[in-house]
Amino acid sequence: RTGARVERLPLARFTTLGVGGEAEVWFTGSHEQLAEAMEQPYRILGGGSNLVISDQGVPERVIRLSGPLAERDLNPDPALSTPDEIVTGWVGGGVPLPGLVRALQKLGLSNLEGTVGIPGQVGGSVWMNAGTRFGEMFDGLHTIEIVTPQGTRQVTPADLDWGYRRSGIPLNHIVSRVRLKLRLSTPEAVLARMEAADQARKGQPKNKTPGCAFKNPTLPGGEKVSAGKLIDEAGLKGTRVGNALIAPEHGNFIVNLGGATAADVHALLRVIRERVGVPMELEYELWP
Ligand code: EPU
Image 1 (tube, protein in one colour):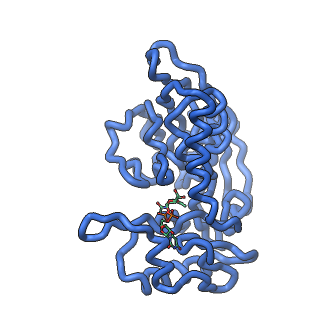
Image 2 (cartoon, protein in one colour):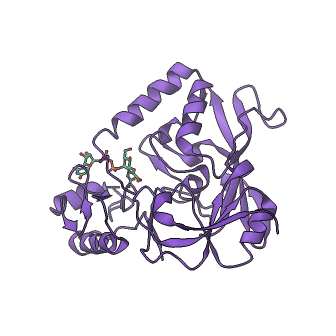
């Protein structure tokens, strides 16, 4: 009706883990197409870089932002920008984060360079406040547009209960586009900070992976510890179920050796929960 492209597709190809059965994928490039897609039960698929999808696929419609909702306007909005703070035009939720971070570096615009190396799209990265030790998405957000079956609203970070790897936006509320809030710097200075963040990721596995499995837990004393270190200390690196492996390089990464199933990954997550004494919150999103 609204011209959204709909296709039944294997979801594995949309994920960095490379696992997942079929579903009906709705490629939506406008608010009208989004509204039509949301008339039936749906899930939203971003860059698929933090996602473990069942081998049976999912019965719901899978929404993927495309067209204008995967484009970016990085020009300063004159009405919202000041001499030292630039607020951009709209950046679609379907825009890949790595290309955006590179473009901002070339323009000498700072605030998001700490997210370098994160493979997702803008919408999913905002939804989970993706980040590294050097920075996170909420360092550079001015306005967030959220679409639900009830309608569209625009909020600022101050309206949300966001924190470490958390935006406060409910699951299945779609981050359709955002305006970025950036500081005027130089390409050289931004690049130098990107290289520092890149350096910290050198030891991470290169295989197919959804990234870190668990959020870093905060101990009763208030100290935040690396989940990877805890998994390592429990002696679990290199543990294999089927074709899924706890990475020998970093304990918090589960990798697909080729032909892994979602069931293999779930089994490894269970082993980690059983063997690490500290409660840890899952960072992966599981379908279903
Ligand atoms: N460590 C170990 N063994 C391990 C893993 C880590 O001893 O198996 C030690 C390291 O040697 C280091 C410390 O633990 O002394 C911290 O490790 P790292 O620098 O790798 O940081 P992390 O806290 O484990 C976080 C993020 C990563 C991000 C890196 C680098 C989380 C859950 N993880 O890992 O983000 O890339 O910092 O900035 O917050 C992700 O969220 O998907 C992710 C990969």
